[in-house]
Image 1 (tube, rainbow, N blue to C red):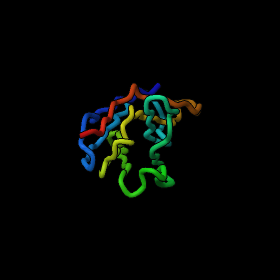
Image 2: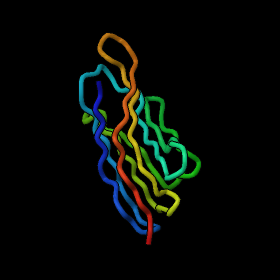
Image 3: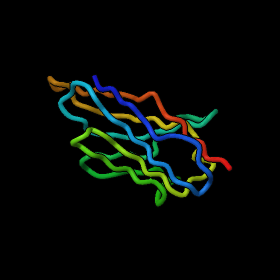
Length: 119
């Protein structure tokens, strides 16, 4: 199993920046994909950004403002969020798609971290 722990959320003014971190721990062979999702009140959870050996992928709404990166040695994924807007307000969740010892694919979610963009 993989335990994902997010950090870095908080309150920021419009136009400001935040950096989210998500550290993975546990017993696994390899993490394939790490992603950030978000869920705003009354809305469905949506993919914000993902990163794998094949590259990165972003939602259109965050392209040019958010950057996802990964430190494989630390099993940690980051989300640098710049030029934040009130509509970025949501709970941000970390997600990992990983390979168990023995070859089975599995997935895990973090508990989420609140990001609030408001003046």
